[in-house]
Length: 409
Image 1 (cartoon, rainbow, N blue to C red):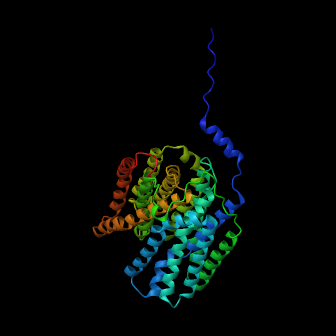
Image 2 (tube, helix red, strand yellow; image 1 turned 180 degrees about the vertical axis):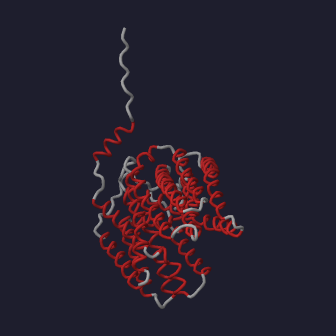
Image 3 (cartoon, rainbow, N blue to C red; image 1 turned 90 degrees about the vertical axis):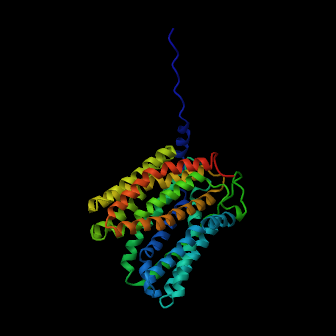
């Protein structure tokens, strides 16, 4: 007797993929918000690379005092993110976007008027930082609002790509205007005001019936997805050592033009790579994504130890790929692993970014100074590469032990 043919096993992802293909790529409001995220970062990052010089000139102080001011601004931007995310959850995403852009615009105006006033300059920096703290979770949450899990990888990666494209273009705009600060701040303020006016026409998001409950402010860290939080902090701890210290290391080793091209390539790499790999990253297990991401970061750090222009360019390319995988997967895992709203989740992730960046500044700066003083600076990158291998498994075990379930309660 001939055996009946065994029917093929249904693919559980096939239905999701068919629905994803039928859905519109982006809605009009999503495109408007993506354009806003691009323009906001073009404005902000046309100023950020030159802030240290600007503050030193306007405040008449040394770099140590400038570092304190920049550190306070970073603290405002990252440490307040869970609070601003909880605020956005209450007042609504559209209002938060517009409110953040009002803060941005006031900050740009303070920079413009503060040429002879150190107080106005510092106030402008803090206002822009506060605007960024409110804008980031609202921007990313607006993009994924009402979208099912099958659409989140595409929308999150698109939001990141728009932001990174702004980060890549901003320094170019700033380089053209840096010798004319008044013109620079006029342009930046005009950009902020223009985006704010555009956002006034966005439709207000509708609260869905299955939306998670709004928690009191004191519980803004309630529902924290512990493992993605820890992995995000580790990702930025490693990543920011590249971002903060490579420019100093490259001086005298790499042509300035080549270094600038490599760093622009890093941002453009994120813009191109994340959307291309979004579906694969979403389907991959967290350990596999971590292995690929931290593996690329480690390979990039090893390449930096070579100290040549080619080695630095290759290292930056590897780190661009690793960062694209890690940053996207961390956010997707946080969204999947928390019962809180997307707005609050993105605020919590923003806090993780700040924690990792702070550790990079404290621990990474100390290590960099040590190896610089001992004339063995390339070894610094090998130490960072070793951390890319040793720390992820430890963080994974710690995260699993701290939260054996799906999310904190």
